[in-house]
Length: 385
Image 1 (cartoon, helix red, strand yellow):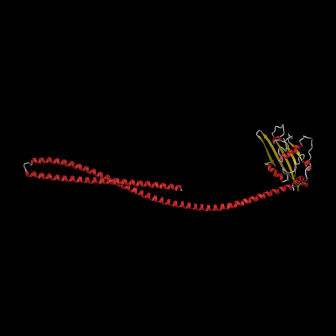
Image 2: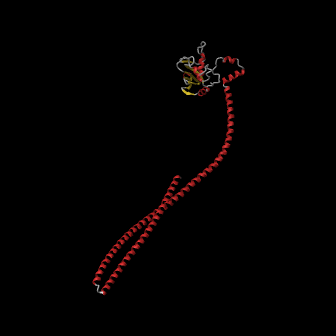
Image 3: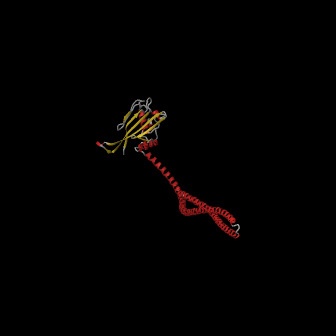
């Protein structure tokens, strides 16, 4: 079993030790003697301070900053304890037991805003709990009798047998085992309560699990139905898109047909208007020619009348000639007027058909616009899915 002892104590600016002081502890029994007030008790206080085994009041100080050496400009104090851990069974050179060094240190620093205390174990910053856990491996505890204070010996002599038995149990570690047994029993009772609570929780969890299983089945069916709905909606939209595309293509072809028919009829209308204009011009020329010819013939007839005035038979022949020519010119004029009237009727019919084609074109354009709008709605619906 490993053994532990204090090998060296370093006190710096702690209570009456204003300067850094190193106190060695040799193997065996070490005694520190001196007059009253020389600081013997401060050595024990420094050990309690470094190991965190006592409070500031036990160390005869109101506050931890009071442990700093009075009159020092440094507002900090530090105590370091070096333990020698030996294992009698492990030997090194010349038969000496192997030795391991354990260093525990505590530093306190005061400032205007307060103070703080820092523990370190082998030069690593740790907590007080870590220090106590390390010391407990060597049966050193805050409630033990590893350190005997002033007056403890006198108090032991006046104790009853039962109280001294408790001290012996503490030194032998029996009390610690009793405490551990009691603690284990408490933990066992706590564990039993936790098990009972856990069983109730398991039963409740089982009910919740069954309920959640049913909800899961409902959720899975819902997801399946949702996916099926989305698939069917996509199929419907695809068919609608194909239908709208076919309808749009048909309307586009119909629009092009109407446009070509309108262009053809407009071309035909222009031709008819040109023909009417030419016929009108021809009729006007013929009228002018007829008037001019009638005037010339009238003058010629007057001249002939004067020349043939005495000849009755010649006058009647002349009048018959004039009457036949007038009848021929009148027929020609009637034919021209009939052609003009027919062309005007054809022009009116073409204008009516052109207006009808314009209305049909507007209807086709409206259908195209409606199809484009529906196609855009379908695209937006697809984007939303």
